[in-house]
Length: 197
Image (cartoon, rainbow, N blue to C red):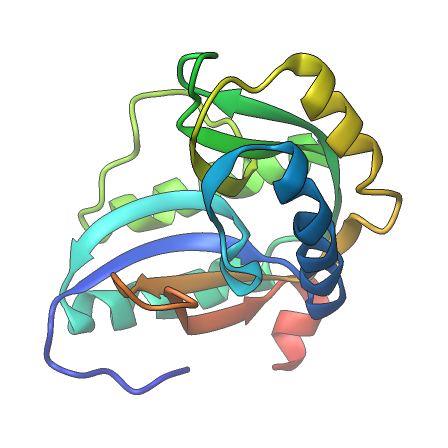
């Protein structure tokens, strides 16, 4: 875990991608950005599955939450996820977000997300009102329309390498204007791996 300074933190809980998948996505983006007209592509190290966005926090509150997340992770099971298709948020004429969907152990993922919300609520963090919809944010701010055909063609080039075994959850701190923008404050192994850590 990183050392804590005295400033206010902007934090969230998420699932990191393993290094090999980050590298695979980086190679995929190098090709996809010519076909998909987005202006801002997510740094490979910043691509993640959000479990809960928490917002502003004191370093002390983040440290206390991290300790409870460690215990939660030890009681949870590892799960398998894979990238499954591409979609966009926002108007079709110029979408705001390019995202990749997920498949695999989604019931296990949803149960884990609900547990994270319950733990964070004990520390005063509120759950989002909207339903949980896990995805990977890949890019933002399209310069023009993005067709379904273009998304489907780009998704085909991702390949079978875009899957992984989730073995930990991470408490992140966001740093505006930095690349990568997300700093792990606590990495908490799931299941038996967590019990041995």
